[in-house]
Image (cartoon, rainbow, N blue to C red; front, top):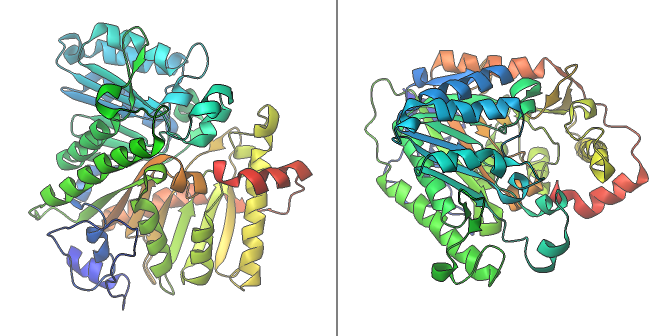
Length: 482
């Protein structure tokens, strides 16, 4: 049955060779000789699962309650990958939940935490100070911080905190408890647990969680390691360089080799026998632009380009800053009806921020207005609609994609993860998404209901706002940094 879905979604498409500079790894399992979604198996590892093992979480409190439950009850491994951990009461309760875990107390719980160095080190009380107690209590706890290779030399010395985050971040959001994965765009912070709307999906699958745990281990091999006294170290004796000292080219080349070797290995080992209950296919994608890993952006652009007439795409992003390539593809190649949901300026987390950051919501409006004009110039405004999420007292951070086949009420594909489809997601940050294809009607209905809950709060975008002159200059110079 699932083979039929892969063969009928994009009618008439034929597998083309992966373009130059796009990684293509060997995969022994082919869905068909014609592509529709079958080509995904030549670009990303494929994990067949039962739709019954997938659960969509809809609200921040539910997300937090799940985290709290699994932190208390994980039996052998706990892996948290985020931009940062906040410093409030709710975040402290998560730490306490881990400490109360019986397997943690018995020193049988392996804990792995990966955060971003710049964001996790901001302020005197920060993610690192919050996590120190775990290191002091358990030798099975490992905390790593990704340091972008772009922050070095004079830049590292003189760019102040907050601004140094513009150069690149660890942006993946993966929360793993034994064989359960919660993937999201949400960080481990109070707003994301209360009134900041994101997307969240819980998946129970050992092979998928093994994949991501191994990915994290590989990424940590080129990250700074934190000890119980909050000292950071890097194995320069084996690397002969570090993320911020020595040869940048040597560092990025070796880090890229580590990630590409892992992806190759996962293709070669990822041979699955299909169970009768398997009605859903999951493809994890990676994007690490500074390491020249561009798997996710290739897949995203191709999905947009090949969406046929009478199909529908719903694209969500907390920050509207689509790359020029995505904009071009949507306007010139995509044939689907497209609805793009973004944060209204009043639902943007940067609203009322001090300094230039306070102008960022209007910068996104300016970019959206330029895209709207582009659609009009090419007579595509009837097909591409812009919406702004607005919910009183809430901010919006949700991102992802839903694909509705021609004349279908429900989507058969959804993408969920950390990227915002913008320049910094593609070129600067560490990102990951899941492309999920299903033929199960109940899961397709759940995908639809999830998108409906978000889009019903979308107002027709008013992009013709008055924007201060300095914001125009800011966008012209720094668009790729936010």
